Image 1 (cartoon, rainbow, N blue to C red):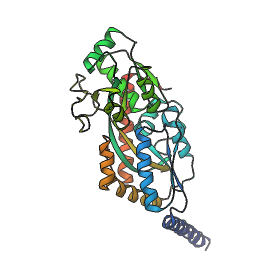
Image 2 (image 1 turned 90 degrees about the horizontal axis):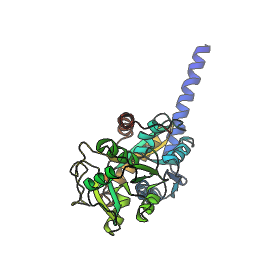
Image 3 (image 1 turned 60 degrees about the horizontal axis):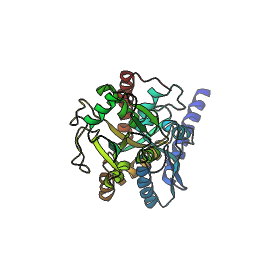
Image 4 (image 1 turned 135 degrees about the vertical axis):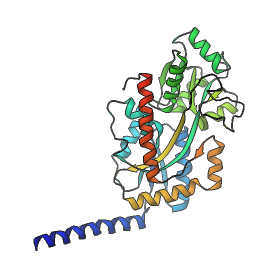
Length: 325
């Protein structure tokens, strides 16, 4: 009798939890949603978060606030979301850095990229572009490499922080071309670009969307893109392979995640809405106009993609012999 009563209580609790989740999903969202961007404003992560956030706000008639929390290569903002209430009201715009590279680059991670998050969907893939100041003494990657070999340790490259794809792009160039470049990390790509414009650093591998306005304005020179193919926005700019760096291929990615244990009905509701937004023709045009590629997918597909990326970039870090911070 006691066993039957225990079974009855168990199923009542189970169905009760499911009912609460179903009810919360039906009512969700009923208050403002925050999308944490773990980098400074103005970068590609910020641009995508604000575009998607505005469309979510228009669709659901609730405020969607973008909160920039830069620092530690994106770890500070990401850790904040990992510790947040798993109710769908605090999300993070994760990146290849925060959710694939950082586990190999930081010895004391404050979150587990797999266990502490519920993936929603990848949002976009973005090539990086190698840019230098318009007054720089080199006009091609070959000239830059020749200069670096003639002046070891003199050239610096900025990034949006340790472990980001901006740093990895520079590290990969160092490994393949065997040049001595000095890495200068920032809390986001915007301050790095500002110092490049002021000739405080020599170069940066920036995400195409945030670098493009400066290239078009003639303030920065684009020497090459990091993707395997040229991009429509810069048709005359070669790929790194075409520029003389064999085997070079890097693409940044961005995607939305919630804290682990966020109810599946809420994750599914977010996924459906964001995927529909990413498939909207005008949103696709806005993303593609900045050099990015929309990549809507299911939560399961995004989770599998993240696991593969973690393994891939761990091998790169080991090959480059980078020491964890």
